[in-house]
Image 1 (cartoon, chains in turn brown, green):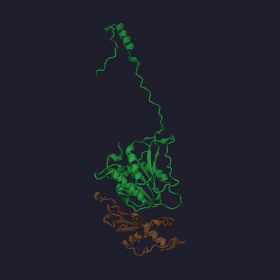
Image 2 (cartoon, chains in turn blue, brown):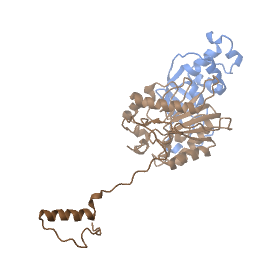
Image 3 (cartoon, chains in turn brown, green):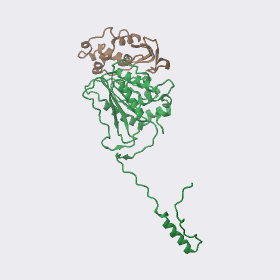
Length: 131
Length: 285
């Protein structure tokens, strides 16, 4: 499960109003490199909840990866930024698309319900009494 | 062979053997790819160069897009894991509502999955409620102006109507596009739904085969195991009526009398011809 996906997920337990963001707990995660596509990041950025993304990286013990405040668009999409090591766009790309959580859990912020992640797939299925 | 939905609930029907067909059978993969391509065509994503986030519900479509996809899948992970899909996978029950926050998805497709909602596989399942929850959550998760294309197999007209009704009640606009409507084998129904204010693209695209085109009969999108039928059929609405069955002329009274006369000439003992000879009898048996 990538952090991009985690950013989209919400809990749908009965009675829960928002169920977002899900708290991430990861016991096993890895990195897989993938090519940076600036246009893709540009298209994604409006959809991303920055706080949730930062919280997820903190949960993975990567406090240095992303700043608390979302960088400005000029900074992210600056000319040639993609080639600079440690630039904002490279960090965002890495956080969203290159980190894969293999084992762990997602916790609903309201109900406390834990959704396990196994082999990289979060199991969001509710029991009958939770629907 | 009856449809998969009638045989068993999805988590039982799609056991390892069944799921394997979706990863190893090239024919099934080809069919699924074709249906998925058509669904994407109907999705009519704007060609603005901006990559889109798509949701694939049911994970029977063949991975086609290079943009990030989040397939949602209730069947065994065997299928998806083996195929190494590009997007991320989720294990969830679509009848419980999509587990995404509002307005994040740019489009959704589903291949051969929605009809499963019409079956109550557990005593706690209420098909109507599940349909309502599914479409309601789908409407919520789609971005404004986004589309959803759901290919489904309806058991009967009533089921098809139920699916469409609940989609409309959720607030969607749109309708059903049917490819090859006159062929029972090749027929595919696509529920095309738009979210938000109708735009210039409100008219539904035309289904294939509506103007009498020839279709190939060897399409089969599910695993009901039908044999390879490579015939090509032309289907017309006004088929010539079958000819009336022509009875044999040889068994009338005339023939009977002739036969009796023949036997008499041969020398056999034949009863005399009376008014009762060759008379139509009441049926006793």
